[in-house]
Image (cartoon, rainbow, N blue to C red; front, side, top):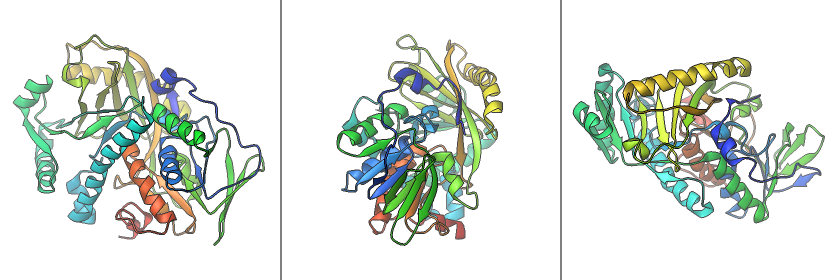
Length: 404
């Protein structure tokens, strides 16, 4: 399936950064990672860095699926509020999920610093109440996060207006957030892996997977085979093909990015992630060269032709919303696009084997708005599973939670 529409900025800006070969002969290794986006890249990097012989297989060019359409706001805040997760799973597990995502920001910072030149920057995150009736929920969320030790500030209306130049009834300001170029990040991770001896194949489509008690055999549409002890399915939306029952619903999100703006034009938006309490939510972030990226207007469309037809109208709607908040900020979309993504009912990911697939088939389903932070956490979680070690997130981020 075509996962994106329009002109995703990252692929336009970076182009084809490196040519990886297609698989042209049978291959054997410890772990096959299916998926050459940012999720597969982070997982392969984790496994190869701990001594596993890994092969990465991507059906398109590397990074050309959901990664190219990602807006890459890196936050510890999950799309599901901490207070709502606590109602589902208890306060301890809800706080565990939030703390893990907070830790992932630092882990991604370290990884980005290793590979360099991926436009990674730490940014505070402003979460504002879209309507006055959202304030009580925001206050309860604030109190819950303070109770669990998160560094967060409550901003009343006057403080939001003074510091950020727009009107909102209240907001939460967290110091912990970041941004990155996800496409460039994926490429640089995979290029480094290839240089160090890891096999990376793109334009190679897996058609069948056979798992036994001793290993896994993957067959391509061209009849070639990859044999391994384990397989990690990190193919985003396409992972659902390998499950009998769906665990997520597909949606599309829309975005535009401006040309670089004059120095100082963005004011506090130059170094702050902004998002709102309404669902679907408007979100904004900057880039290192002074562009403003705006996203939102999510809908339930996952048919490519219908999604394609909506891109420009959705971009205009997003622009109108931003201008409603900052009327003096002159913006003009330079590139606009949409991407199909999947989200789970509770906003949490799924990592690890599914009971129907056996212990050697591992899923990496970093679904929802925290895909990159989830992928960073999932890399360690999956390595622990492959090495038959315990991991504190295995139950909460695994399929077992469906039985709770």
